[in-house]
Image (cartoon, rainbow, N blue to C red; front, side):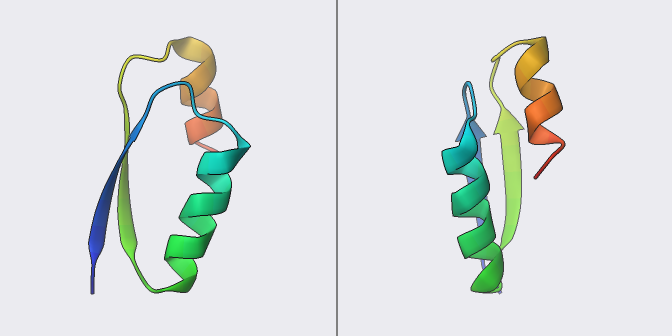
Length: 47
């Protein structure tokens, strides 16, 4: 099992695509909101 730490500054659809691909490979992820603001934290919950 692999764990991937992903810094997410102003996340967009690319992050959702990447996390989906990593999930398909069996990876666990920690996505870190590194100061993008309130709007970004809402998008991170969609992952």
